[in-house]
Amino acid sequence: MHSSLQNIRLVAFDLDGTLIDSVPDLAAAVDAMLVERGLPAVGEAKVRDWVGNGSHTLVERALASVLGQTADASVVEASHDSFLRYYHAAPCERTRLFPGVVEALDALASRQMIVTLITNKPVAFIDPILETLGLRHYFSMALGGDSLSEKKPHPAPLLHLAAHFDIDPSQCLMVGDSRHDVEAGKRAGFRTLAVPYGYNHGEPVSSSGPDGVVESLGELV
Image (cartoon, rainbow, N blue to C red; front, side):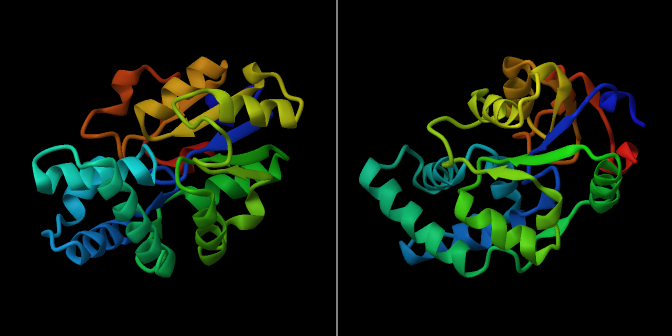
């Protein structure tokens, strides 16, 4: 057993950038939204640096990039609706699992760990993606960015899970790819584990001070 799992009863995973590489599908929806508004597409590389704070912020960042300034609230809202429409039509066409994910989830299941999901992605997209990738059965509960009044890096979603399963936060582990995951975990009193391959706005996630870093989730086997 990996040292990060010692005395842990509940593991909470981030989704995008931790379990799945969803940027290809997110970028396709962002570009479709921009083109619909008569704006230039931005491409996958830029979107990769904007993911992690929820769909609304993703759209705000895309608009600011092409407009050269912060977009009006009404433009952001209309663009966000457009983005959601395009993403809903194809949320998992090119999205792929990162190496070691299934092996790690199988290992946790065999140890009877409670496995949960906390993502800032809108909740409506969680089940379709998990079902398509064959992951849904691993998770006892999944929270999206709009499931509660607060989202990561606020600790509320993590504390909600700990309370729901009646587990002390000190016996919970937050696994993610960004500083927001690490901050949320620390503020909730969770142990934190980070992966370096995800979406952290160009910064090394190790600089956020997680309790541990693994190159692949396969190390949890």
